[in-house]
Length: 301
Image (cartoon, rainbow, N blue to C red; front, side):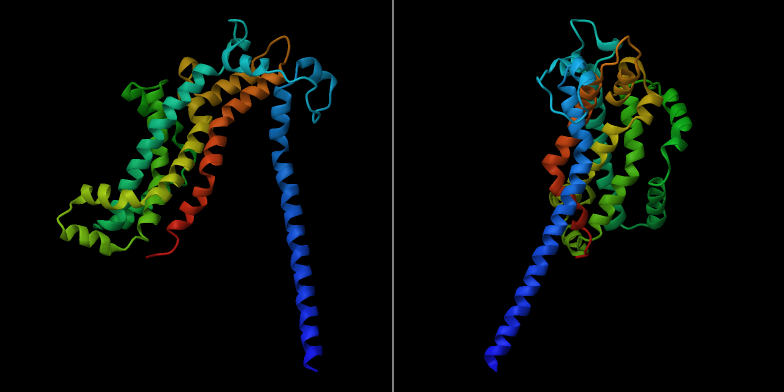
């Protein structure tokens, strides 16, 4: 009798294991299909950028290049034979975006951390109202601030400049960075701050010596969020800059829409991929830390 019961339990366990294996493979196959569907545009961009125009006209969109050619990448980056492609190439505008993104991300992250620290560990009258105002700022659409921001940049004398774009992205991103750091710091025990106060540490010493060293997860989240949003922004760049002061997304748009005798799809695809490389690298190198940082402050204490 015991042998029969044991065999029955073994059969049930074997059946359950087969079901788990089946559902696991079904999940993997489904996710694989979605991944291929999502990556298909990237695949088309890359292989098109490596083809000649003759091959693009004659071949299928999904076929691999018969001969790999990097001329389109060189043309997109620095122009052709000293004459740029449609009077637009990406090299100077790429560095414009670097000059814009680095200070904007650094400043908005620093002040977001400072605001989050003040709103959670140095409570004051009206702090909840201040936080609600920051939270409200997260829901203000880009279009609503175009006119007042243009007026402000004009009064400050920094319109159509990299400095003006840095200010715009810093101010607009401050609500998000404050929200991120506030939600992270609220999970840190207040006893740490009280102990530091007892030891004689002041506002900034506690911030730099106690909180910042343990803020790496949320700093990574904030940097990725801000970097991606600022690098990919087109509306602010096209509204507050033009000509030589434009960021790369504006230059990419101008390059693709420039009318020439021949539409060079390989150059356009290469330019689009060049414009997307920095954000792609950021996610490849720091993507796993993004999820960790988002969940790091989800449980208090």
